[in-house]
Image 1 (cartoon, rainbow, N blue to C red):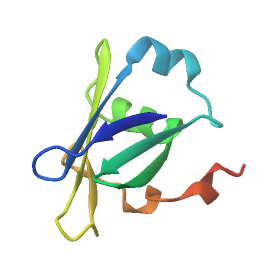
Image 2: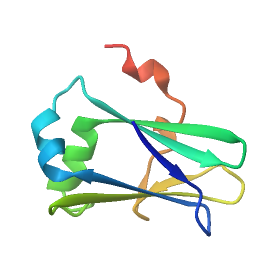
Image 3: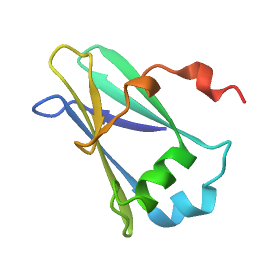
Image 4: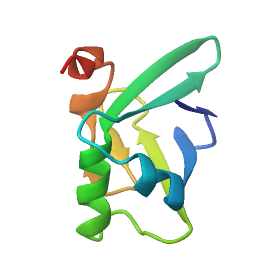
Length: 99
């Protein structure tokens, strides 16, 4: 679980150590990103396997730390990961945790 408060422009920034990411990577591992907005929270639940595919595909830069930013449009209808990957399907998707 990673938590971030809202920054300017509806952005939320997270960091995952790449060594930890690779050590715990499995099909049953999920990352829960908590987007803290004033008095409410939103959740983006992304499978580790999907993040791994983004890293290997070059859409998520590797390195010692995976830097992840989730940007939410002003209407709260579109969620983008690192400015290029739509992750709307993972917002509030706790049902995806049931394997």
